[in-house]
Amino acid sequence: MATDDQIKEMVQQKYSEIALQEKDVNQASCCGSGCCSTEVYNIMSDDYSNLEGYNPDADLGLGCGLPTQFARIQKGNTVIDLGSGAGNDCFIARQETGEAGKVIGIDFTPAMIEKARANAEKLQFNNVEFRQGDIEHMPVTANTADVIVSNCVLNLVPNKDGVFKEIFRVLKPGGHFSISDIVLDGNLPPKIQAAAEMYAGCVSGAIQKQDYLALITNNGFTGITIQKEKVIAIPNDILAQYLTVDEIAQFKTSHTGIYSITVYAEKPAAASCCGPDCCK
Image 1 (tube, rainbow, N blue to C red):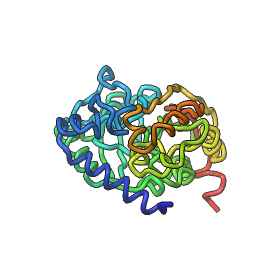
Image 2 (image 1 turned 120 degrees about the vertical axis):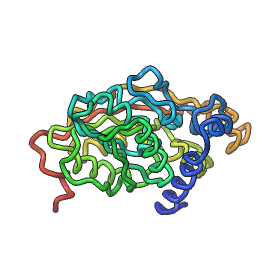
Image 3 (image 1 turned 180 degrees about the vertical axis):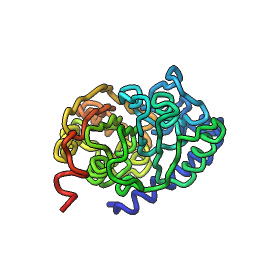
Image 4 (image 1 turned 90 degrees about the vertical axis):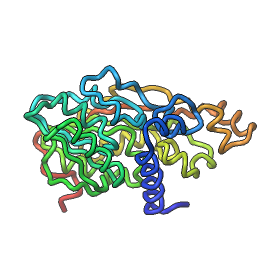
């Protein structure tokens, strides 16, 4: 079994490759926003193109929801996007928060940070910045954000509990998050669970839905609401890279559910700077 550091290195390498590809190459290779299904990355994404602030150059097709659509961002808010990629959700959040607000994108991959900064410069957004960092240890001071968003990123992080602790620390009391992620109902086949490619595609890193929601509750958040849920169907041509024909048939009849959920939760207004255990 891969260690946490090995998983992080694999994810960083794969997303560096995606960031460095030209958009037309990215689409043609199906590693990003293309229409074919030979890669895991593009089978979960939602259509952003009708949202105000959308910028095609920043959309790599790597998400599994539209968290900014549900995030209740207000003018003047400070918004943080976890796993900001090329900046897509940040630029949509900036449309909501306006010039009086601030948007901070955090990403683990230097190539993604470089791409996002170039996109922000082209758009001449002076209140959008991108910081390289591990979202298990955010490069942000406590009580900074009014809103935190994230799109299909926590699956890439081995220590999901640590991320929720950091979200609690960085949110202002009374602040909230809206996060889209992949969760399971039932168990994935071991070959998929072990596949590095499927991990980078946000599938094999998924945990059980009830465990995911329990992490949110146990870290002190309230008002937990599932804002959107959709079924993710992995096409047979992808499954065939990991499973035999018989194993695919068994998986299809196992009733294992793979879902994209968008979850909303709040940090209580009376909360201290961090969660119930992290201030000791």
